[in-house]
Amino acid sequence: MREGVTKQTTRIVLIRHGQTAWNKVTRFRGQADPPLDDFGHKQAKATADYVRDRWSVQAVYASPMGRAVETAEAVARAHGLEVHQCDALLDIDFGAWQGLTPEEVREHHPKLLRMWFEEPHRVRIPGGESLAVVRDRVTSGLTTIVERHRGQAVAMVGHMVVNRVLLCAILGLGNDRFWHLRQDTCAVSVFDVDLESQATLMLLNDTCHLVGLGD
Image 1 (tube, rainbow, N blue to C red):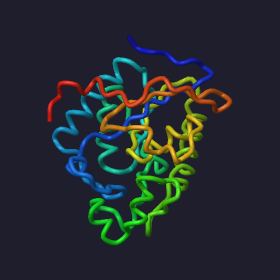
Image 2: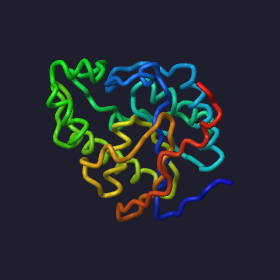
Image 3: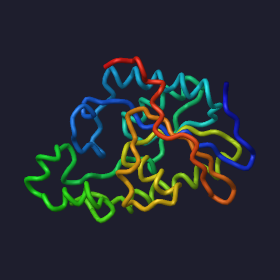
Image 4: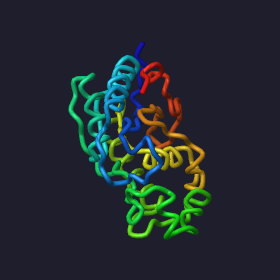
């Protein structure tokens, strides 16, 4: 049964992209752009079906990164829609760390890497971005989307870092709580945003639709 939305709110169905080969190992992906693997495509299709059956989505936005666009295209097809690429949802710029494993980063930036896992809000990646920069970008994008789609449900497909930062923001949490919110591949989170820009979280990191897919 589909869940409705009131005229005073915008419902955001926030989705992380499906699996890529880089998701099978711990590696700083950021703005590198590995495509979905075969299992990632299966995840995207299962997610699209799940979202279609529960929410009457009227617009689909995605990070311009290929893995997010591919996931969003599956969601959009299920609703007869097109994907709007949104730069605000672009993954964090990991700069000098992009494509490296934590072990490789540790060789050059051991203290900074430890801070990333213990105090992520204090880190600006060499040659890249901080969580604060990402937060400003993604919350600005959310405001634009909400104002454009009052009384509607909107799917937004992003990345682990972007989604975690956005969820921290709508819950009124600082970026120091970044690691406290899990975001698995093709997980679905849902929140409503009202006329006063107050958000109500209704679903977090839901992966029930992926059970039984195998890998």
